Image 1: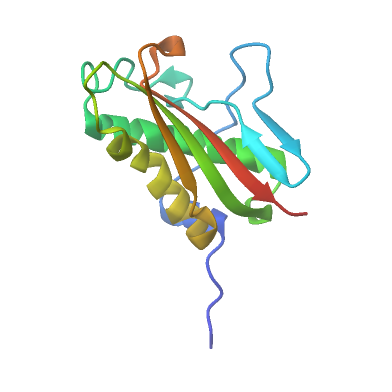
Image 2 (image 1 turned 120 degrees about the vertical axis):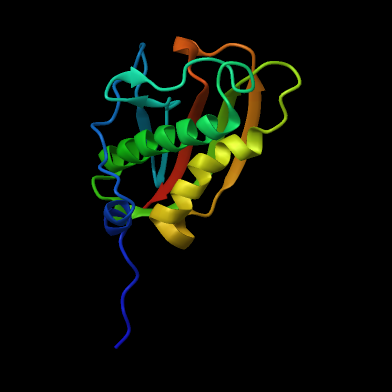
Length: 158
């Protein structure tokens, strides 16, 4: 007998992840927008239980391994936004793109290692549907001193 692939919710459960309430915006904007079959999230930060995790610059106050975990938490928040937007994670047809912003100082070059925290999460939760393209940008300043910020683009079907 052929086993059906696990759902995103089952994968989250197997990973020990309980999705939080989608974080509220910190300004005058929406946390996600749906246009046709496309959902995009606003920038998600590594906030857990309303507390910023690992504030500061990666490569200075925050090491690369903690940056990876921060990107994973931002990814969890992004998945919570996608669930709010789609109503059901099984409606997410594909994670299209991650836009990753790394708060770092000049000379830092390990952006891919940091943002793999979010990419590895998307692949683990969504399987083949989680395979995406990615943009990695290092920036000198970040709102709320977040070490990373992540926006996700996804295709949705009803």
